[in-house]
Image (cartoon, rainbow over all chains, first blue to last red; front, side):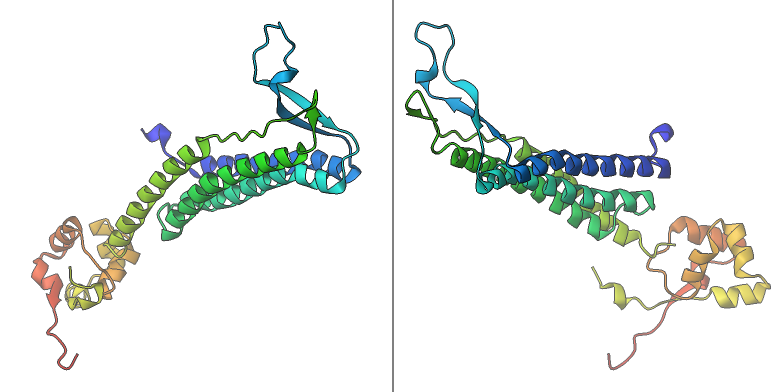
Amino acid sequence: MRALRWGRADSIGLEAVLWVAAALGVLGLVPRVRAALQQDRLEVTAELPESAVPAGSSVEAPLTGTVVIEDPTGQQAALALLPDVLAVLLVVAAVGLLLRVVRSVGAGDPFPPENARRLTGLALLVGVGGVAVQVVAGVVRNELLVDVTVLGERVPVVFELSLWPLLAMLLLAFLAQVFVRGAALSADVDGLV
Amino acid sequence: MPSEQAHRVVCHLDELLLARGMTLTELAGLVGVSVVNLSVLKNDRARAVRYSTLTAICDVLGCQPGDVLSVAPPVVGR
């Protein structure tokens, strides 16, 4: 078990990984922002109407395709960017909270009351934020496709919701409770000789 | 559970050390507790004492727990 003991080097390594994750998130956004500013063509993945499936073909509906919007307006470009910006903001905020937890563990004090609050915040961020990003992405996609027709039919409105953020929120909330108990125990032994 | 502020336990390490001509640092070394922690105990800032610590202090000083700790009478009017 001693080999598994968390040390200062581990904390520094994890901090570096978190910084890289945040940096990759922000850097990944740069080309999309640049494209939005230049108002390049927009590509939107959409579910196509059943009429788009060639008669007699073996392809079964729903059929997914990429709708290209040439010369999008500034508003469309900004809309398309919104879910990604939100997602990156979430990642940066989550990394910020995690970094503080990792630092306090590295400093030998894993159970200050702040860590329980940070993990509760992280749970809400992942759960509520994760669902919000998906909802925004769905609204944006449907807004961008509102005037798009395929073979004379409107592209169907589709919302997809992954439950993974909610599952992650439950796990993080459970972990936050562990830290609440840890903080209470830590307060109990504070001043113990 | 009584509140943390309610305790009136007084530590007599000062007198015990003086009587034996021993310093807190020497006691800390013999007991195996840090000087900082013993200082906390000596200055009545400790909130709890492990039985193992108390046993070690009594062994080194040749005394009983009642010689190390006592409870002061309640202050009238509070």
